[in-house]
Image (cartoon, rainbow, N blue to C red; front, top):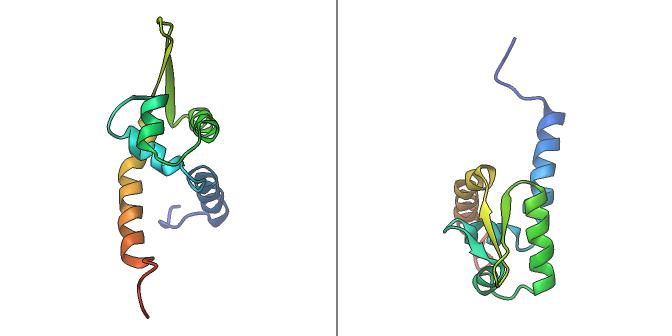
Length: 113
């Protein structure tokens, strides 16, 4: 019997898992940057300004492990590594856009009460 309600524990676990990945600094920006198509490490570093190589490398590995990105290696020469959104990663793009819109309307730091 379905009442249209959700199991709070299962929902909380899913939301917690999502935010454990998306709540990390840079992850949303990396996903957004790849919304324009596949990119190399160097292109991502330029697009996501201010991120160090070490942090970008860690975040790309984490997002790949979460199956939000795919990583392909062209043996070259020179060797090139390209990252792209998976189907799951692509599904996040409208969600991130909506979250950004909500944040700009509701979390503006310069809003006065």
